[in-house]
Length: 260
Image 1 (cartoon, helix red, strand yellow):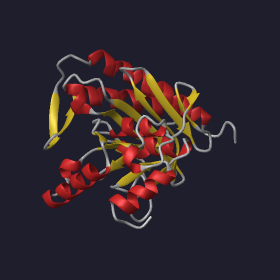
Image 2 (tube, helix red, strand yellow):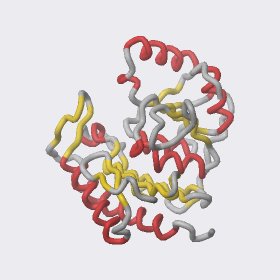
Image 3 (spheres, rainbow, N blue to C red):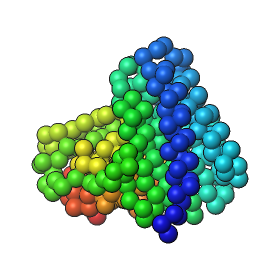
Image 4 (cartoon, helix red, strand yellow):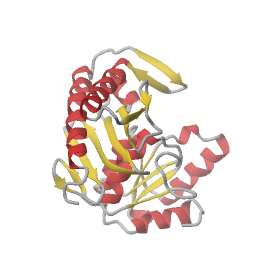
């Protein structure tokens, strides 16, 4: 089991580093962009990064499928496929804010088997494989040691996509329970930060497979937990809470008012 999915993880690390160089080289320069939905952009850099990662996958595992946030999607009915977010945090990137990432995960036999999140600006590579631990630049990481909600630094995103009633209710609950709230602008990197204790919790009311696949494996391999209403699946769960098991339980019961 020591080498299980190690070759795939090695390829993922290499692929995001190469694509990350494309992203890094374009940072701070004007890039063509298109609006997919209000406030949701894709840029030429997203597409160039996606192409680089997809080509690396197809060169080594041509029979595998690919699910990507942007243009490349095929083979999703197969036993295994790769899940790509070629630039998570496009808005940050376009505005010159150095907080964005590339996310790549291998989905095999109904679970995420390997995953990486790469911050090319700070050259931080988060990596994990099933039952193999979670790492930052080769150093093992674990979720934080905070045990009380009042002491937490919590990351969240996409509150703006909730309807006005839900938005006011959720912002009220977060404000009542937390003094430190962050909206970093990259869900994948936020989950990676949670896996190593920079954030204590991540609450994402709307998340897609490419946002959370790699990050969710980092969380669980770092000793944490992912919770979603009805049970977690990166292919189906739109709302997730991630962090240490104790904090996730408290957040679900005391803030969300749900059953853990």
